[in-house]
Length: 170
Image 1: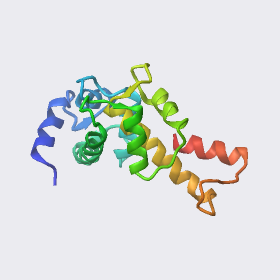
Image 2: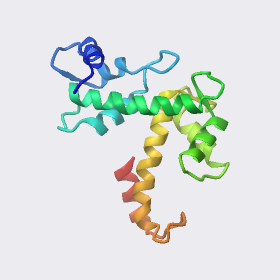
Image 3: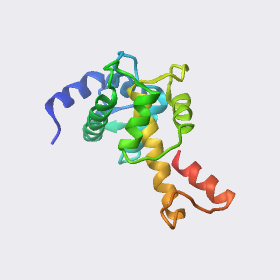
């Protein structure tokens, strides 16, 4: 069942009235706390995740699922935005990752900040960067697990297996 508010929002951004949102229309619908639009790479990832019929667009039902997904990530984001700045800094991201069950070194969080702070400053993640970072981590973790036979965070694979894993999951 599609939430009526979500349906209204979908209709407002469906400029072509096709009953489908392309990347540009979806980007208009998705905003960060500072009212900036989501980065187009994040929008493309959202379409890829929720486009069940592989049209490179999303229909109302797919949009509804996307909206629920983002709502749960929004709650997570807000829970870790301790200073209520509307952004996640490196310390807040580190705490979030730990509480979500990831154990990374102190050297890894700056890598995430550099990659997913779309402002280019590598100091704070807007909501879209936070979501994209966690999507990438989840995808790559899932792809890594078959190689981590002892479940200790280490694996042995060939360079080609590594490349195939990364290419298929990024």
